[in-house]
Amino acid sequence: MADPSSRAGTRYASPQILDWAARTHHPADAGLNRAFTAPAAHGMPEIQLGPAEGRLLELLLRLAGARKVVEIGTLAGYSALWMVRALPPEGHLWTLESDPGHASVAREVIADAGYSQQVTIIEGSALEILPKLRDSGPFCAVFIDADKARYDRYGRWAAANLRDGGLLIGDNAYLFGHLLEAREDAEGMRRFHEEMAAHFLSLCVPTPDGLAVGLKLPAVDT
Image (cartoon, rainbow, N blue to C red; front, side, top):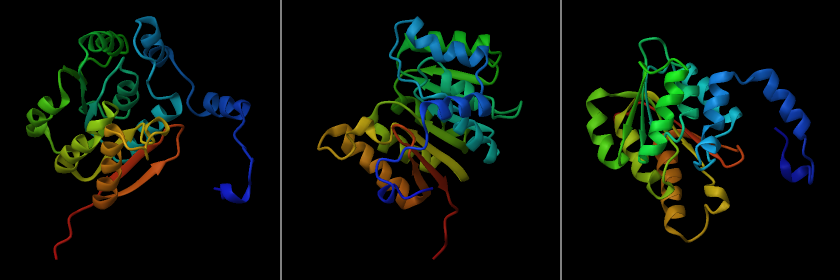
């Protein structure tokens, strides 16, 4: 990767190149297209991650050999579809959504794609639901794309409930450009970054709004 400071103004990834790469590496299908357009069709916020980030999620989960995954923040089920495709037939995804309307749309999307048996959509507050999921763990991956001020609290739950070698992934890690500001959600997001860096082998991938990825390492006896 080129050093941006040595190539001022240089942008190799033109819109044409990005479009060609997307069509080549992760062409969309009917199920993904429906999930991606569902928010607009149902008057929901269009805040789902992009196709490249979706493919990256699938790739990471496949590399990790993931079987049991938790998602915090379902929206219309687009990211859930990418992740469940990475799981073996006996694998399972639990996805948590606070808005009943969003959860209803996601159920339709997941059912139409044929994954209802592998995906459980749970409605309610994530902080109330997560303790009840402990008995289903340890988990192979946790993906967070929900209320930003609570990322640090979700991250702590993930750290306690992931297996060694499990993945913690957080979208919107740049907080829409507000990460370094003095505000509650930014403080929570910065704690999420700092605690991930302290306890995981981690990286913030420079996607358009940042994708924080951490690998849980085995504890070392001292």
